[in-house]
Structure formats: C-alpha cells, structure tokens
Image 1 (cartoon, rainbow over the protein chains, first blue to last red):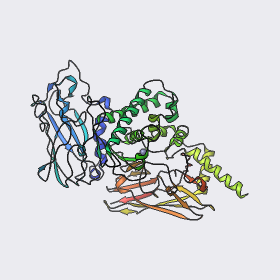
Image 2 (image 1 turned 90 degrees about the vertical axis):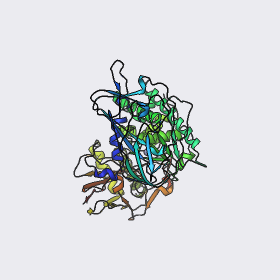
Image 3 (image 1 turned 60 degrees about the vertical axis):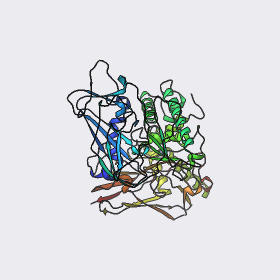
Image 4 (image 1 turned 180 degrees about the horizontal axis):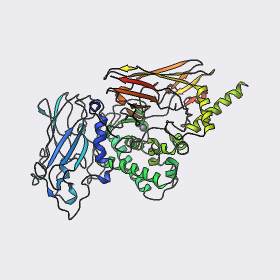
Length: 368
Length: 189
Ligand SMILES: [Zn+2]
C-alpha cells in the first residue's frame, strides 16, 4: 500500500495510521530492536542521538474521532544506541510521555504509572544507525481531552518522574504538533485480569449504566482466552475446526490464519484497546479498519452471551481482526451457515472473513 | 405451468448462488462457462441495477451516488438491504480506483457486524417497482483529491427471495445473488 500524495491524508485519517503502523506492527515478531542481541554493543542514547517526530493525520478532530498520534523514533547517530522501552510506546503507553496542553493549560494525564525496576537487557529498544521505528498511539485513552479547544502535543520522555535514577538515559523530545479537538468524555481505563506482568489496559468510553465497563472488561478477557486457545490450536494438530471455517488444510492456508491470530493476540495483549459503548444500532459492533484499536459495541453485543457462538468475546475478536494493521479481514458472509458455505464456494474469502475467524475462535460446538 | 416456471426461476437463483459464493468480485476465478450463462440469465430475470452520479464535482464536495434496483419480474421480490446503498455505507461495498490505477483505494468507513435480519432489513419491490438509495462515497473512499475515479458496486445482494415466508432469512440461510451494476466515473476537479 502506498500513498503518494499528502493532500488526501488531511482528509482521510486512515492513510497515515495504516502506513505508519505497517512498520510497527505489521509483523510484530520483526519489530525494530525487539530482540536484544547479547554481546553486540549498544551504548545508551544521549540527547540528540534519537530524533522524535510526531505526526497527526489531520489538524482537526471531531468528538467521535480518536486522537491518534504517530511517533517516529529515528537514530540519527552514527552507531547503534539503546533506549529504555518505557520511554517509548513499544509496549503501549505506560508513562506520561507526552506534554499535552489545551489553550495553554496542562491536560491531565490519566494513564498508568509504573515503578520500574532496574532495567535488564530486554527492557531496551535497540536502534541501528539510521534506523526508524514508528508507533501509532491513541492518546484519548490516557489524556483528558474533555475540553474543546486548541491542543498542543509534544513528546517528552522526561515528563514523568517515576524512574528516579534513570534520568539522563535516553531522553526523548519532539517538536509540538497543534490541533483542534472537539471535547469528548474521558473514561478511565479499566483494569482487567490479575496479570500485572504485561501491564496492558483496556479503556472504555460511554460504558455506564446498563452497559457497564465491567462487562466489557470480562468480554475482553474472554476474547483473550479464546484467542490464546486459537493460537495453541493452530500450533498443534489441524483438523475439522480449521477446515470447517477456513477450508483446505494446506500449509499456506494454515500459515495465513496462524499469522492472523498471532496479530490478534498481539493487539489484545499489547495495544491500547478502547471499547466505545455509545452505539445504539441493532448491530453487534463495528470498527473503522484504519482506526485501531477502537471498537464500537452496539445493541446486539449487550444481549449476546459472554462466550460461544456470536458472543461478546467472539465479537471483539471479529472486530479486532478487521483492523488493517491486525488481520485486515472483511465481511463477506455473516452467520455460521453462510460462513461454512464460504469454504466450498470461495475458501480464500473464508480466510479473509471476520465472522469465520470469530466462529473458529468461539469453537461452538467444539470441533477437533 | 405457473408453478413450474416459479420453481425453475428459484433453481436458477440457486445456481447463481453456487456460482458466486458469498460474494463476487471481478478478479475472482470465473465459474464454468455454462454456470456463468445460467447465472447471468438468473440475474437478468431478477433485478436490474443502475448506479448514477455527477460526472464532475469540485474537490471537497460530496460525491453522491444514486443506487437503484428495479424488479422487472411479475412477482414481488424481497431484497436484504445489507451491503447495499439502500442502508447507506456500513461496509466496504464499492470498489473505487483513481486515474486508472489497478488497485482499489482503501476503505475508511465502518465495518458493521450484523445482528440477525428482521423484516425491516429487507426492501420489498412489487412487480415493476424500483427502490433507490443515495450515498456520499467521498468520505469513506477518500475522493477528495483531483482525479478521475471509477466506482463499482461490489455486490452481491446478500439475500434475495420471491417467497415472503423466507423474510427474514432464518439461521443464516441467505440466498445471495450477483448483480450487474454499471460503474460510475466521477472527475474531481
Ligand atoms: Zn465485520
């Protein structure tokens, strides 16, 4: 995919998001600097080694649009340097890494603060000379954008003070970007699960009353366990469960679906996912493919069971699979019957179909 | 005789479904020649489609297309509105390319997972009757830059029946039908 002209980008926010994320998470296992190479020297970056650039797809955002900002880190030094990952969005935003002001006043940071231990090798991101890495983050989940006004956003890894003792290591700063943002309700992130190691968070928007954030949180962990189960299955013996939803058991077909579920798992586990409950359409849910990782859940979601066929957990998997940066699936057929038929009429379509992924993951009734 | 004719038409519809699968795009492998002929015959007998739009618009203006279905048969037809402009743009239903590019422009609109259909999810077309929907394709497909855009409705229609008892389709037993709808060319200046 390529976008030759900048003019369209102003209008169509997805263009920027898609392009910048192809490098960052199109192939999560190959992300720049992810694998620390023992024995190969990399010095700690000092001020000026790593250029930080922020970009926004458009300069004005309506309340329903996410505040997506693309952060590009480029090693402009002549040798390999290393950065503390928690000063970067590598594993999602875990710190107050941005300076956000609205009409001159500081917008509150509502995200997580961690007390970091002494960093080990895997806590560093390595960048070779000239190497760049980009991340697109949704700041709406962590900063307060409830006020309508002119915002100024700057990257500043020194904005937080929770890693006393590591100041001076890889400070990262960017110029500021200015944009007009229509105010939107802020909902604090909901903690989910008991796992504190990976430290990811789910955020919700407008999930109150009969559409509680706690239900969304349970659906999210259900989606994660269904995804984990799918990943395990795909690494084991392939049988009817695969062929029923995705067609012939060939190594190429299996590898396609395996990469889809690896990407779905990575997104659930490491990205800032926002579930928006404001939709009152009769549908289950929807997403904009080019606006990860915001999932809008609608009426049918609330009456769906937590797991099993067409469930809350499965719906989140369906939606997650759509994002261009995840599995880029489409909707060719809805419902179990139509999806089963798809494997014989057009099995490539089955492997590109969001509901097929959902039914495979829900696995109800269970198939071997 | 009337009954046999009816049965025959339903059979052709079924063939069309087998040939086209759940959805048909032009780049897909062609079905066998005889199946295709029958499919086209079935489509011709069921619904006629037109897609019209402005020949030229200024950059930044809406690009409003009118999608119109006509029932040329002697029976009422029930058409599921999903994935057609009759419900607006709620999925990636058009192929849009710019200045003769081979690849389609990316779609930036919503992708909606549907709850089971209800009777109101269908448009009813009496014999000879037409139904139309108007959509602005500019925001979802990014027709903001000057250029010449070719816009094609992807199809198929996800469920079409002449049997009111099958409205709405239960348990996902849809009968999709490929639809020939001429492309529209719009120049954005
Ligand atoms: Zn979908």
